[in-house]
Length: 375
Image 1 (cartoon, rainbow, N blue to C red):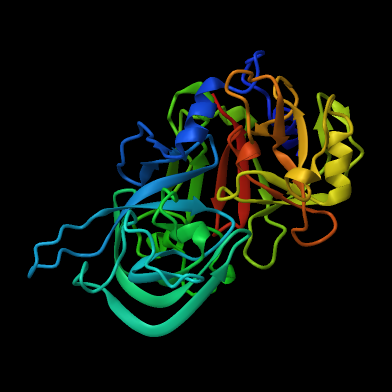
Image 2 (image 1 turned 60 degrees about the horizontal axis):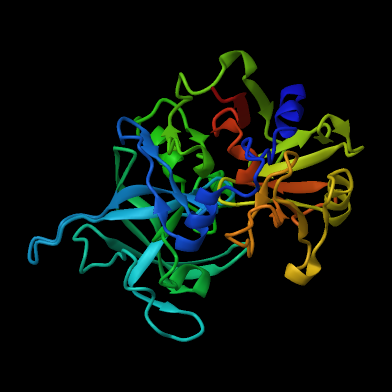
């Protein structure tokens, strides 16, 4: 865990931008769309596109079978790849908003018997509630292609009801693929990576993530099924730890937290690793302890309970921007670490502001997590 502590000190560095919040990130935040990965899909690897200014990441999969009668093509479907949940779903053709009853966004790709001749309804239902938003719908089977790997008759969900966090026009994805362990699944089915391993398409139920960073303009994010992609990380820094969670989350023990090498005194913590979460959510006392040693950091509950601000020019902590003046990029940014309740009093939820600093991999068969320094 010494390596994990060392990488922890790199969380939130401002990519050498002494002038403040990166101009490119500001433009992406205002646009809110996708920055496409340049990674070409092949043999178990596919790109991770960036939502807005590193708010989240999506991959493109293919679902369904051409409907011969109307010659409808199989359409690419953009999905968030989240290691903190275990359910896969896309919007149904009859999807509606839970409050208004209006149809879900026409901009989203949806799935139904009119769009796929291979879709079959199991007669079962599901419901998933996330940290933000919820969906409910039907459990179906259909053919899916993940990262170029076909998975026929896979069982997953189509959402007939979505909250506005998923149904709105400005949401740049069509669904979610959960890559926690299937013991966590509300649908009570195998995750795609587990199914791919079971049918022999990949040698092991491993998912590896290189989370991209908009500011470096490399657009090289990717997810790989079946192993660790070589050439993206320093193998001498690879550390593998046991999963300490019994429910199906990917959770690691954390020995210490430091800020610029200064020990914060926090120990015996654990952290759930979730590629589908933007920030780091820590117990209130822990979040306060971290920000107490960051110059210029202060509570900002007027922006939302549990939030902190810090100078956008800091080289200590990653910041998620909120209301930045485009003519002055040196103001206050929202910290990448916020206070909140995840589970136990010493349990953290660690999202992309940390995970984009490392190669991150999960192994269902061995029940382990791996981290390595990127090259």
